[in-house]
Image (tube, rainbow, N blue to C red):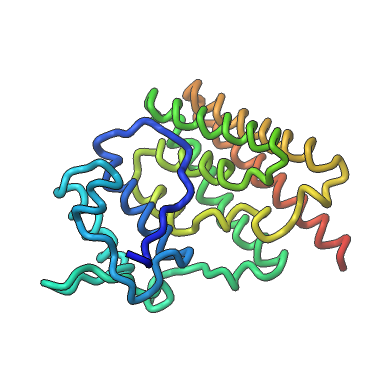
Amino acid sequence: MESWKTPSPPVVRPRRPRGLVQEIVEGLAGNIRDGQIKPGDKLPTESEIMARFDVSRTVVREALSKLQASKLVETRHGIGTFALSPQDTGNFKIAKEDFSTVADVIAVLELRISLETEAASLAAQRRTDANLVSMEAALKAFQDSINQDSDAVPPDFQFHMEVARATNNQHFADLMTYLGAMIIPRTRVNTPSSAPEGRLKYLQRVHGEHESIFNAIRNQDLEAARAAMRTHLANSLERLRKGQIGQA
């Protein structure tokens, strides 16, 4: 099928039975939102999705039902399942054009501070050993990306996504999936290149902030996790505000 493109492989994490449905939802929703599957395109068959994700037909059908409930796809009986335009829904949305200025990115960061500080606290309370393994994998991928002269956006988002998953509240993960990697300021503003300390030290500082969040979650210290996440996002906010003033 020409419309079906294999996305870049995500950070490897242990597959948990309860997470299989969400893994499919995230994969297909991401393909639709980034244009790999365009509105009107027919999705792969259930058998093709089963083979791609190595899951049962029951899991695939539950995932497709979730996508239908989110108005990302529609099923035409006897024909197949087709992608809808995300912009056609009347639901809350943050589109790419909502990130056109530094002020837009700052506004989304303010939203993230409210959302992710509480997510970190819940993650510290509810995280499993498997969650910790997934977060560690994202941290390692981030460090590897720094060493490879990358902007490290995918593993950055993956780390925040794993924190959301560790809340064991699906709504946090669903919202993070919806927002996608564009919530990372570096996708819209080249903060590493403008950082006074230079790209490498800038990204190392971000990595250190991530490690502080992880350590608090691992230690199940709710207040420390909340504070570490707030500090991390507030630092990003302050860096952007300083850049905005410098451009005024």
